[in-house]
Amino acid sequence: MIGVDTNVLLRFLLGDDAAQAEAAKSFFSARSQADKAFVSVVTLVEAVWVLASPRYGVESRRLLDVVADLGNQPQLAIQEWPAVSRAIDLARATGCGLPDALVAELGAARGCESTVTFDKRAAASIPAMRLLEHRS
Image (cartoon, rainbow, N blue to C red; front, side):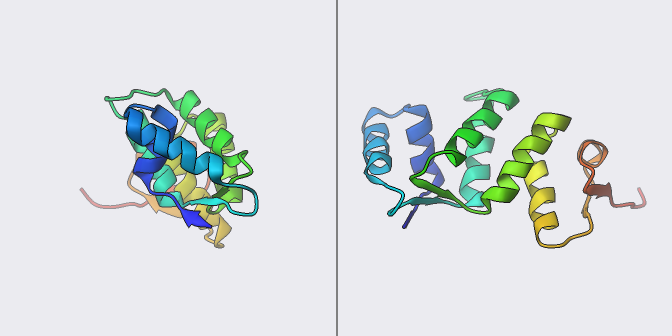
């Protein structure tokens, strides 16, 4: 197995640099179920942030489809795929961001009773998150 950095995954998905995109496509097409490319949760979240950035402006629903499609590729091993898949479902159901859903799902997968946050929107939309009270 060979790990994949965010920039390689992005060139594969975006094709915005012809030479690097071709190299990324060749790399991924050379992978197989026996010799997978490993995509870490960090790589996945970085890619989501870049794709959602003003530069690329990929809408949330499309981002969820892209990540789900990656998870269905037999030549890819997505770290913590069951939690990622649940996070995709949670983000679709609640409208929360995939990174927030993933933080909550990864915590739940490790036995956390909840995940504390200062993000009021995340706490309101993700059942496994709760607002950490503080004094202003």
